[in-house]
Length: 277
Length: 202
Image 1 (cartoon, each protein chain N blue to C red):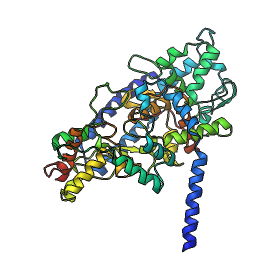
Image 2 (image 1 turned 90 degrees about the horizontal axis):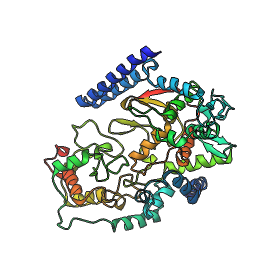
Image 3 (image 1 turned 180 degrees about the horizontal axis):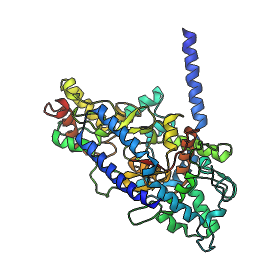
Image 4 (image 1 turned 180 degrees about the vertical axis):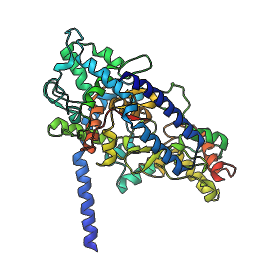
C-alpha cells in the first residue's frame, strides 16, 4: 500500500501543475471546460488518491488507547451502536440521547474523546485542519469512519424533533445574508449551471443530483491543499469566502447546515474519500 | 380570467405562509449563530447583524413584497453618496486591477488588506478574459452598447455603490454602502466599464 501512494503524491503534484498550465494558456471556453472535466476524471481515480493514507491513519487512531482513561474509541457509539462503523456516517448528523444533542461526525468524535478517553479535546481541536508539519486526528478519523459508509446511500435522520429543528434552521441559515458583501450560501448555490470564475457551483437549494454528488464526495483529498478535508473545513472555507466571521469548529450552525444539505442530498451514493482539485 | 387571478393570488399567499411556517423563530436562528460565530471578534459579529433591508431579504428569501421593495428602494437610495466633484469616471487601468482583485474582507486576510471588487468572479467584462463567472450578467461592451450615455453612467455608479437602491435584495454586494470599495476605486471600475479605450468596450 505504501509504495503506490508515493507514486500517487507525485502524480497529484503533476496534476496540480497541469491545472496551473490549463488556466495560463487560456483556450476558448468550451475547450477549457472539457479540459477541466478531463482533469476531474483523472482526479477521481481511487488508486491515485492519497486520501486513503488518512483512512489508514484513522484506523490506527480509532484503536489506539489514549487519554487519562487510557481507552480507545472502539466503545464510541456513532449512532449504530458502540464500535459499529458500517453505515454510521451515512446517517450522520443525528440525535444522540446520551448527549441530548444532534451531532455531526466531528462533534460526536470530540464527545467520545472527552467522555470515553478523557482526551484533551482542546489540543485535538487546535490540530483540526492538517498542515505541512501538523497531522489532524479529526481529518484522519473522519476519513476512516466515512470510508466505512462508502457505496452506501445518504440517509438523513429527521425523525427526532431536534433533528427537524436542525434541518429547518440549516435551511434558514442557507438563505441568511451577511458580511461586508451581503453573501449567503444561496448567493452562489441556488441556481443551476452557474460559475465563480471557471469554478462550477452546485445548486444546493433543491434536492437532486448536484446536492447528492456534493455531499456524497466529502470527506475529500484536496490536491491544491495536499490534505484530506472534511465538511467542517468545506463550511469553514465557504464562510471565509462569504466574508463572514470565523465559525467555531464543530458548532451548531455548521451541523444545522450539514443536516439541511444531507436532506437535499438524500439517496446520494457515498464515495469517500474522494479527490478534488 | 378573474377566477384564475384569484386562484393565483391564493396560491402565492399559501406559499408565503408555508415559508413563514417552516422558518424557525429569529431567536432560535440567532442562538445557532451565536453558538457558531459568538467567539469571533465583536466587530466581525457586527457584520452579520442584518440592517433593515437585509433583514427583509433574509425573511423573504430575496422576494420582498411590493410595499417592502418600495420602502427598500427609498431607504437604500438615501444611502448613496455621489462624488462631490461630479466626475464618475476614473482610470480604467486601475479599474481593471480593482475588478480583478478578489482579496479583502475574509478572516484569512491581513487586517489592512485593500479590498477588491472581484467583478470577474461573477461577470464577464473584457471579452478576451476567459476566466469569468456567470452569477451576474455579462458586462462586455457595457459602455459602448449604452452609447456612453451620462444618465446610464450615473445609474451604474448608483448600482455599484448600492445595488439595493436599484434592485431590492439584489445579490450584488453594496460596495459603497458597506465600505468595501472607496469612491476612487468605484470611479476606476466605472472607467473600466465606460472608457471607450477600456478592453471592455473593444
